[in-house]
Length: 384
Image (cartoon, rainbow, N blue to C red; front, side, top):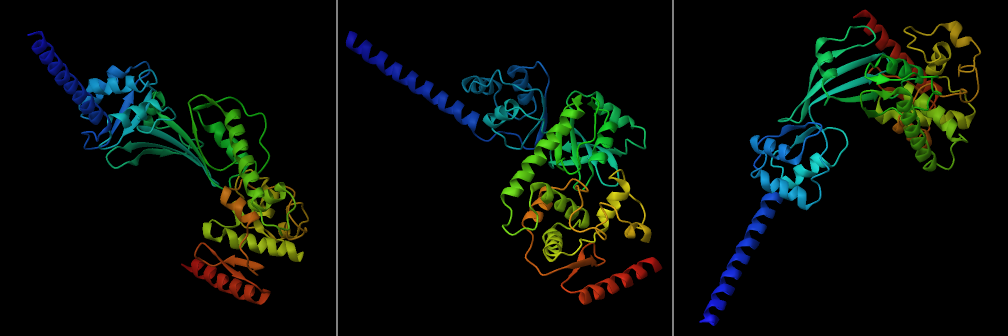
């Protein structure tokens, strides 16, 4: 009899153990497998929230199949106490495991409202935009120039929201003065700027910032990024460059940046200046002359006068040999690389071709023909 009881108990234990193992396997599949979400959503995690609240919200939004499994999985992977506040994009079909990673990995929010402050050569603008989870695309809410227009009501609303993200986007070719003046207009930043950083030392890029971030610290981050880029470019430089220091490479890169807005042309433009330096020819580039007039403080807004082209100044490359004494703007990484790895050409001249790019020439005769064609295009445009 006892033998039968022991046998039955053992059988029951095995059955229970098998059921338990099955439940665990099912839970793992539920946790790691594709989720039921049929369309991406924005999940807002409030400050001070916990996994129970988040799991209940996800279950209510149809993003997970079982709130308890979500919490058990987070606890089992030691992520229950790593929850981050913010607005996060939960993609279609995301597993519970993926969602736990999204809300615990940290960093900037990935969904919701974003304020993008664009600092360009001709001015600046603030764009408020909202991410559409379904398309994954941002949709513009409002756009305005903080230097000229009063902030609209839509901007005031998002400024009060705790989960609004902020980003500053610097265009390639902006000057240090333009950047500092634009940052002073940004009402979501704090702190004074003691002095304008040296020209060329700020990296054009996109910078995530938090409300109240110090302007000085942001400028320091821009400087650190540009130092890294310049060091990277200089380490990869060609052997026979006619520039001897990283600082000279930075100056050359700034001229390349201001001479063309066509990415594919940077290497050719760089080759013209490098070839001229090798031949002992003057660079003869208008942007350096303009910088000598404006000191990088705004846009000239008119053509150069003959007296300005004839004046002997440190930045008039029609009258001086070699490079000007400093950069004339803040070049991006592509222009830095073009300066140290120029295209191999015999070009010594270039002029606008009417398409937004340039026509390049090896000889003065070819260049004069290109200039004549450009004059015809200018005349036709003036007559329209």
